[in-house]
Every structure is written in C-alpha cells, then in structure tokens.
Amino acid sequence: MTREEHQELVAVIRGVHEKLRLDYQTNGDGDQVWRDHCEDVETRNKYAESMLQLATTIWPCKDRIEWCHDTMRQGRTFLKPTAVTPIIN
Image (tube, rainbow, N blue to C red; front, side):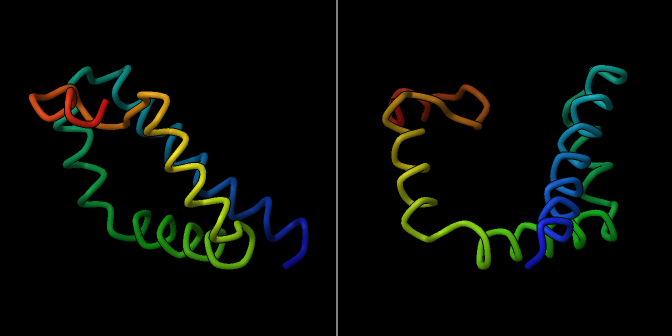
C-alpha cells in the first residue's frame, strides 16, 4: 500500500469521527446523531472498508491487541458510563 493510499484511508476514518463530533456539538442529541449515522449506509460501508484495510495491511495484529490491552488497563473506555463501567475499570 502506498503512503497516499494509507493517508486516504486514514482521512476517511478521521472524517467520520469529525462529522460525528461536529453533529453532536451542533445537535446535542447523541442518540439522534448516532441514528443518523447508522442510516448513512454508504458512509458506514466506506468507513468499514477503510478500517479493514488499515487493520489488515498496516497495523500488525500484536500492536492492535497491545493497544486494546493498554487502553483498558489505563481505565480509558469508549463506552457511555454505565453500571458496567466499574467492572471494566
């Protein structure tokens, strides 16, 4: 994979994340933002394809596993705070 192809894939991922953040800042209703995102099948498919390419051609498996492990050990989570959160931490 060329550097340009890699950068294009990363741009797709970052673009989706940025749009979700901006939509939430504008709307304030996280559930509605997520519903709108889920209805945008084309964007989700492009995101999934980009993530798959990055995960299988750029990021070594061991690095992905270590990142997940380190993230959880540091108490960071991408989940909404719930009754389950103390179990994770």
